[in-house]
Image (cartoon, rainbow, N blue to C red; front, top):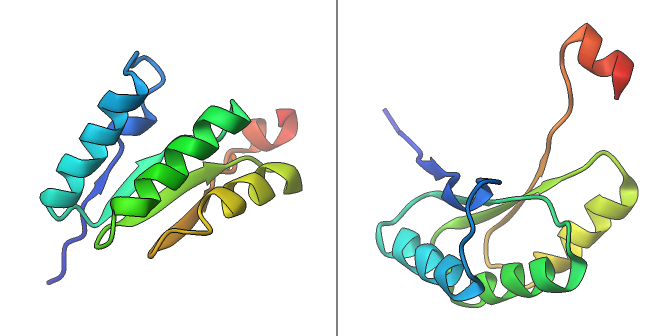
Length: 104
């Protein structure tokens, strides 16, 4: 049996971590051999892109996963930010309930 671990610590909306703290968490997750480090959707283009590119520069064993919205623009931003990652993943999150699909 092969178990993969994905960590969503850096996806938390409620956290008020500094840029440096986020980098340190990513470093520690890489040391722990976490399979996937999940990052939130890009909201502030410059700051979030810089964070993703910086994390991608030192993460070599873990996959870096970035959430994308449903627009082509958000998909493109995430793809550009992940372009330097050794292992990259775009995570497209869509509503699956009838009500969610109707109002999205």
